[in-house]
Image (cartoon, rainbow, N blue to C red; front, side, top):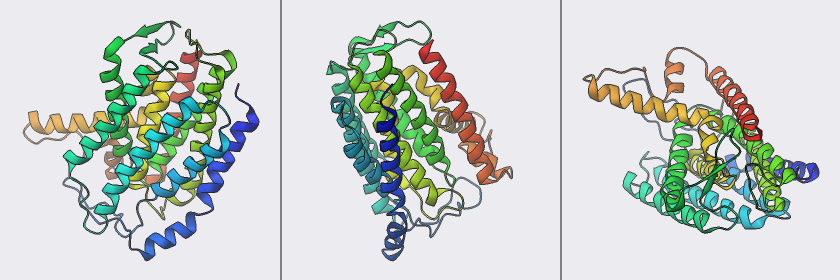
Length: 335
């Protein structure tokens, strides 16, 4: 497995580089009036986040970025592309957050979608052409791989865009997106760490150093999320905004694709899948059943909140479910 000392260094650096500047960043954002605008969602009461500083994803992303650069000693051929996609997705989110401050209106939906598609296409093309990744994905349980050929590109595009959308939808309660993403990052730390130990499961041939580097990258992300949760857990002092949610979505998707285990992502990222499916079900129900809704609000965590379940309890339940699913994914991965 990747050196425990390297993983702990990445984790500690990610935590410190995010937690230490946190109070100063929050004060600065308040001074600059970078606050979440009050807004309505659906037919229910307003989301009571107005006035809380947003764009917290800026120092989450900065802590992750710096910890990765300092902590990763090998495997940069995989870490740098993953880090680049993470940062680019975060920049798209930052642009949306910056324009949204005060007015509640960010960049136009088609503009945001176009930028995300461009980033995802570039990432998919790199993954497809990379000798370290290629067009094959690992099939769970069988230990075999499935070469998708050129169809890998649209498949990877779907994984990237779907994960970004899922994390964005899950970012609706204090600590929810950050807490569940923390569980996913810890899962990928173990997955990449095991890969570096064995040289890769399922017939992988990439050098173990690459997976060791990705394990440290995941540990840096986990540490950064821990540091961010100090200020984002209920009651939140700062929100991650699109800066954080899009960056997390891009990072998680790249980790799944680089590990050649994207088929495990629906299980590891179960909260993101639940968010997307609940929104789709709600939309279809309202369209096909003349406005009738399945949930009081969508995504599902909003429905639970409307049912009277407290925000901390919802976040705890989602984190527990994600942790269990990530553990199951590791079991499937090593089978």
